[in-house]
Image (cartoon, rainbow, N blue to C red; front, side, top):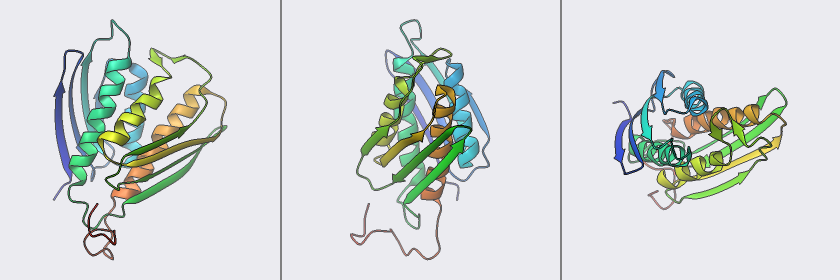
Length: 195
């Protein structure tokens, strides 16, 4: 059985439709109205082997804030929905990812307890139309909507494009690891018996 979720979220600021398949092959179709965010979500899907479809209509005449934050909320909801009861999954995932001069670490726990730690320095204020301060807001929204413990840490880096790209790739790979099933796990990987 495929682990998928389809989420639709509509507010006065954004209208978002998203489908996520955790057991995909990395195919994506992404249209957020923000070219750089499209590129990052495509990378996330490709490197996590997720099939992802996203359509966002947002108030970009204001700025990118609502579209980016709300996309993070919906992605978190989709992850939470697709992972289901969490039986048999590894729960934890991590990745140390090099990209040119950047070394990025992402570690996460699908614990049911949201927490977010972010340590990165983005020197440029924008990459394309995307305001780089929104990257933190995006991942914060994902972590809380997915009820995951998420840590993102830049070990070193210079180029803002490379740093953000490394984050999304590392996040995809860490999430892929955490959502993998393991035949050794009987039920849920917790001594409490629930997550």
